[in-house]
Image 1 (tube, rainbow, N blue to C red):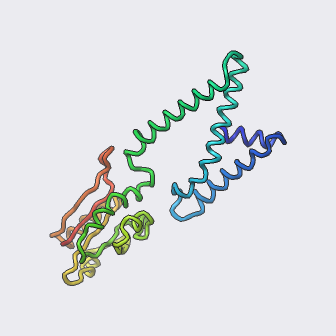
Image 2: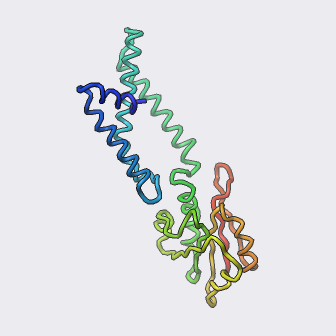
Image 3: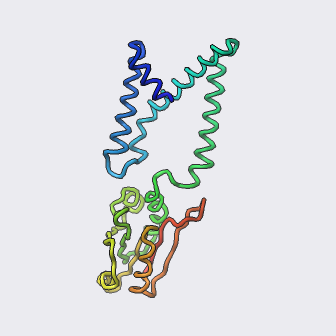
Length: 219
């Protein structure tokens, strides 16, 4: 609402022309941070939108309070803005800490996957080769994964795998660990056929018990 009205006001009035800078700021950050970068939209790339977004929210509240005063002159603008700001703050806190954060969705499904499995990968003893069955959706150089598990060297496996391909990964006494994204859960059957003595570990989202990732560990 504030974005649209601020844009119209900036285009129609020289007095409000400075609002267009914030419109350009918002459009520029949304385009560059949300479309023309690797792995968009990442929250850290959109953090600069905080300033224009807050301005547009304040702009909307001010215009709504002015409209309210034109209908009920006895109202005080400061009181209306304080009540509106308090309501927004309460709703934001409840949404962020009660509805949003527990679901762990803030980085997208693959960041959630990386956050869930990284501690397990870091706890592995030396002597394991790590492989990711994520193509074409997720690859081993995914930033969250490399950040949270910097000591783990992971290799991508192709979209189509076979028992013969998996057998070629054996290297003496080395153990193997396979990270499987939910969209490729059917490949677990191929892994079990190639390494029947392996062990499967599933990671479920606490909020709705949906599968986040699967690990197949071959000692």
